[in-house]
Image 1 (cartoon, rainbow, N blue to C red):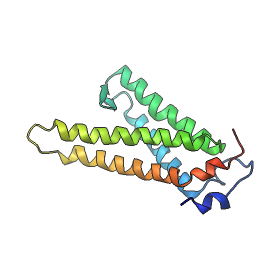
Image 2: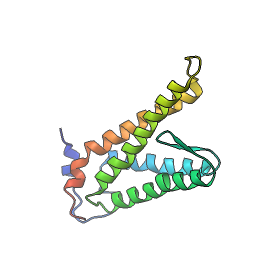
Image 3: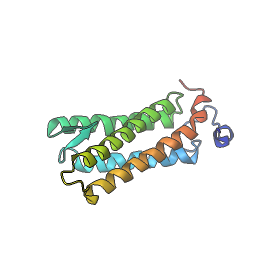
Image 4: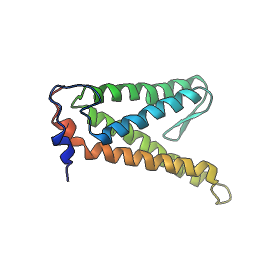
Length: 151
């Protein structure tokens, strides 16, 4: 079932935050929070991408490109109402959902005694749930992007 809010809130050529459906505004808030938290730990902690762990300069580059540059592109696409913005958001958030799921599986499978430490697993599961909810929000509003007049 496609969202009626996308059809009701068609901005024409209007740009900016105002014409975006509320669910996409929420996605932007979470993306902004991700950038803030990433910038706080960037280069100080290892960075895991699809079960590969980077440290030092490679971690800085990987997290900078994936988290910060990707978020900037997503914000620009949302604020300019580009048709490809929905597909980019779906791929961007989908990547982080996949990364979260693989991280959960890696932690579970790497436990020596069969017990998972909740202080590691709980944030990973919560991250996967948040990414899943954001992915659903973008999917729910896909018609909004399909109806846009911008490239």
